[in-house]
Length: 163
Image 1 (cartoon, rainbow, N blue to C red):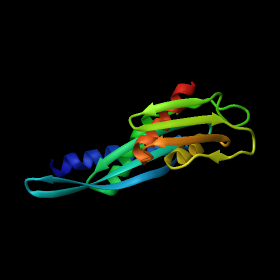
Image 2 (image 1 turned 180 degrees about the horizontal axis):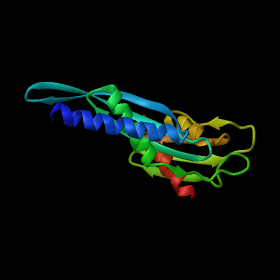
Image 3 (image 1 turned 180 degrees about the vertical axis):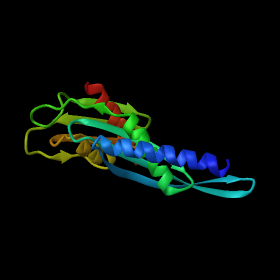
Image 4 (image 1 turned 120 degrees about the vertical axis):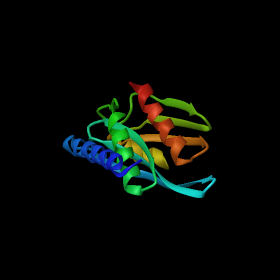
């Protein structure tokens, strides 16, 4: 890849970031990992970023980005999160409509509605995603693996199953 192709890619990512800011979306970095691959020339280090973005009114998206530079990985994750936005149905008690049980890979996730004043009684990445989506009262439990990647995907699947 020559410099002009790289510059056009960077310009594209920054243009998508301007669109991201025009939608008044806020984002939260859930995880940053340093990933390395072993190739013939030696180890190649890259960054992997997972970001949740939300508009605060019940729309949320989860994005993943991977690049050799942290800034580019973050921009890719922001663009991916913007493309994956969906609406979460929230009740008047700022909770969910009904209980949800989701099994995604090795994660088993149970989310239950709660009364006003209960708060977010969940842990890990699920807390961050539910907080960003605008849900204020919910109870939940993880079984099995509690890693950020799979538990965040399981949370997104649970929220998608509500609508």
